[in-house]
Length: 435
Image (tube, rainbow, N blue to C red; front, side, top):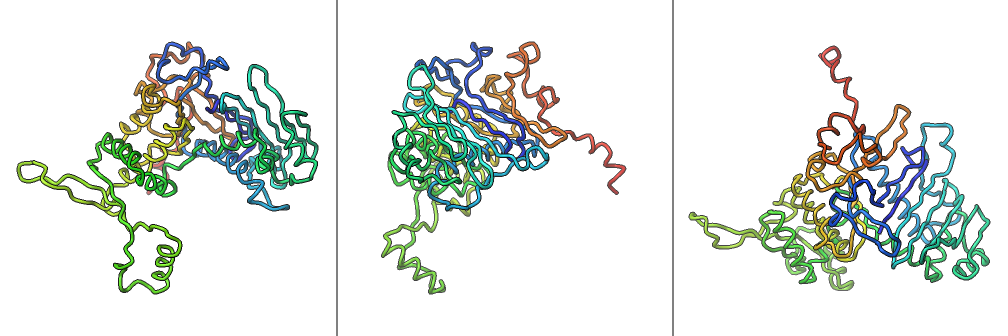
């Protein structure tokens, strides 16, 4: 599970800012049973969901981009780049203090009953520093610390990492963790596995994960679960069937080059190519009695919200069944507020979310603030000052006499009590500006 993610000097975040999913003691009597996982080994209480609010351009998506960059660089730095390739980081550009300084990333998480703390600093050219600590029991142990091309490693617990360093296999633009994992270092592989299990998706464009959901429908058990979620969402869908390309019925006017390529993929590469996804709906007679089923095209006939929720069912089921962490940028886009509430409830549910998967997302949907689904420590905000510097903070950061548990979070947020809303005073003068 994710405990904390921190970023510094990346895009709109100049100063170090952190998302902390360790539960606050101030809310100990609020939704404790459902929303909290008690990690008895490390004596910590962890949140199963968190939501981030903020004005447009306040840093909500940029914070998720920071986490996504860290994930991508950890997984790919040792294999998808060559010596001399630039690192795709972006420091805070609105200050002469930071425009040429490195970006910093750090994550704390648990994996296989071990707590890890891993981080690095990078600029466009190289890895400036890198560190890995782990806590198998009660004491945190340093496995390695890197300062440029100088490495300090644990004498017993990071021997393969020491070997790749000695052999000169770590490029200045690659992470030691990534290289060590390639050479089968057990601990590095554990950390890499956690990053691979961290699911980051866009709520604005579902095409990136729709194929994953479609692939799950080939498994009858998974298909039933997907259909159950679709039926629970009241979308009218009774069944789903994948319509695959039939070589014998390819259009006669299809270009020969395209036809040859499809034929090769189906016959030689043994691929199955979808032509459509059919959703089955009930058909009724004049007495409103169901008499038949009719197929709709998911791509042509269903609403944008239906298409998005269908695509989301695969990642949601995968994450909940395996206890992963799901990060969604703009979860509420195209979805009804009540449906978003139900998705959050799945993750907060002790009965349904047995492996303590986590959901972290940003939104503009203020209805969630009055839904009663969140504790104060699960509600986060991004705000940007006049210098373009964004910060992230929690509702739990306010003093208890400033924000009470039973007050109307939605109403007070819209009024600006917590910050993180746009200043729109300029609109009051539009009569003097617009014709």
